[in-house]
Image (spheres, rainbow, N blue to C red):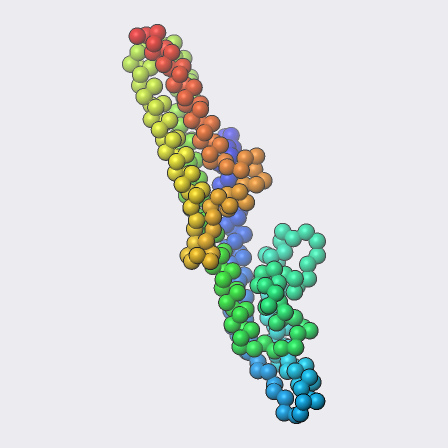
Length: 262
């Protein structure tokens, strides 16, 4: 069986979905671990102005430092392996945290920062992690839409190509007028189905998927990312267009024989 661009696209979608499901599970595990870490309070200075700077530096209690370390370790164990999978070269843990959650959270969790793991920091970490989960969920939804589209296209392409292959075994010169007309009508139906698939595909490429506006995914951008390694960026459009052209060529040949018979 010949592997088509659509077959390769389906493989790419399945692979990406598996990667994202694992990443989503990692974020969920990270949030559970962070939720179990107790927030700490900043110690307030009780002395005069001379003690102020010392008090600020001492504000990060041992408990706060330990809590931040627990969060960093949780991130390192759960999210980081997925985040750095496609990174070339070395990347420090804090650089990865910054890439996933932004400068503010990376700074708050850094060992050298003079602040404990406050309730505010904890909320910020959990909110950022949940937002990333939503983005992943939106992408998975978009992948599911893509998979459904590929499945429909694959079934139609298989049906048409098998019919054309079988039909080609009988030369047109051996067919009578009615048989030629029936073949021409069937090809016209297949051309219409290809036109419908192309229109549906264009509509899907223009759509966005998401459960809230902040996590919407552009389907065209997703397709460009998914199929960049493939010979064609738009495998469905390429495959269906080629099939449409083939059907059109077959129709011309049938019409030529119909004219002779008429």
